[in-house]
Length: 372
Image (cartoon, rainbow, N blue to C red; front, side, top):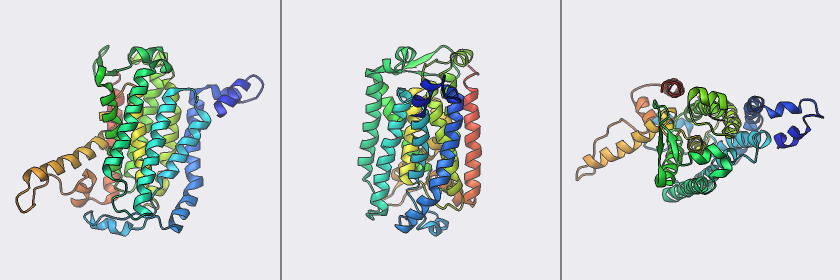
């Protein structure tokens, strides 16, 4: 909104010209995201405590986590506000990269909020039925996939030329065309990432820390993808308008750091499904729009590992189950972060080491742009 209001006044209003520059608006979005988190964080935590909206700890989880019972949840509302407000204020709201990403973010935030509402207020232990949650994720994915296929021109000429293609790591001038499988790929990417972040959200500061690092990576990717010179130098697809996503990523980074202030060990608030599902959907949507679906496997490597640990644990248990209902397990406990806790690692050590791995994965993914 400020972008649309001030840029036309750049010749008559001092300072308005700054809003033409993507770098300025991105930096401002990060600062605003951080400040909004700091401003509404204490108020939101007090409200959640007053209404007894607290986390219920599963009985089969690590015993050390039972002290967290009653910690306010639904803190994802803080993230939704701290990302959406700077984006709406500073981004070009005629840009469909921004609009689709914001749609995915708020859509899954609403689904996550309803899930948390059922669990914490209505006291339904499992919250929203899993299949309904999956249906909402698939519906969002198909909506985005079909919109891209039918309205590719809205994203710019270069995007239309590469509508169903994706960049291949380590290969120069080679694209993979998904063709008619594109909507299915969109569904797998967005649904998988959304659930992956949700599974990672099990330790204080883990999911938001990893997501913030991933957001920083996507800020770099969106900026160079939308810049003619940088994209030509790196020999990647140039997508006119994609640079506006840098503002969303910067806001996400600022909001993530602000939320981490309250979510670091020992956590004062949890994001709940409200935040986790929204963050995952946003990351998946950006990967699709920037033609970096395969790069997401590296950038989101922690999420992939967490999801695979759960799936392999369940499948192996089911495969080895005897007639008494007993089966063997690959990990001491799934998701993966709980396995390391069961090995004796303190929660903070697990979180910090996962952050370190995430930084390494991001550096590898950015290196892959040049090593081709």
